[in-house]
Length: 275
Image 1 (spheres, one colour):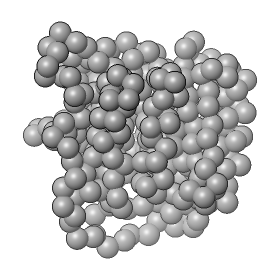
Image 2 (image 1 turned 60 degrees about the vertical axis):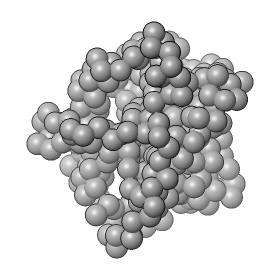
Image 3 (image 1 turned 180 degrees about the vertical axis):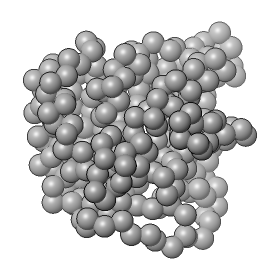
């Protein structure tokens, strides 16, 4: 059972499991059969990969990698919580339109563990934070595993991290804690209310040169979403030049996968400078 953090209420509400939808994943998507152990967290996690259209045709080519949280929601309506991001369709269209291709690695969320794993700091509603160990798992276990097994471009300038809601929050924490690993960050509807410490931490940080950040939120999310995103944009703008920082506020968008799916092409164009 998966749980969604409702931004309009300070409560965590468990919702009923929906009937499974037909699979919508393209053939480029594969679910890795063996979950990876998560050191320090006493659990394991499934990875889902979306390979570029040319991956099998061009065996010498290496690719940027986009790491994304909530893997169940990225590629397939059959596994998603409330609709999927359509990442596989977006990547296929970008390859056709721009020639840009990348490997996308979806890291499944931990269902009832999701809130803790994606919290950078302890919080009254989210509980004891496990964001540090979760990011260590991404950096020290997932990324080496992917770089060893697939033809990646492992350098930070070719490595992105994207997430929404609490996934956007923990992706922002990665900017501060693992800036030497990830060079590009997609922060979709980040739940800054759940980690206000990030404002001072970001203001005090020395962000690595070349970091690229795209912030997004919808006007129909919580009352605090847009003001907090705009505030963080102002904090980041003191360190990053305009060419490396963007903010998109969509007035009529809510807090859901459909909105994030609609934003994804523009975010990838901004993060990878696709024009």
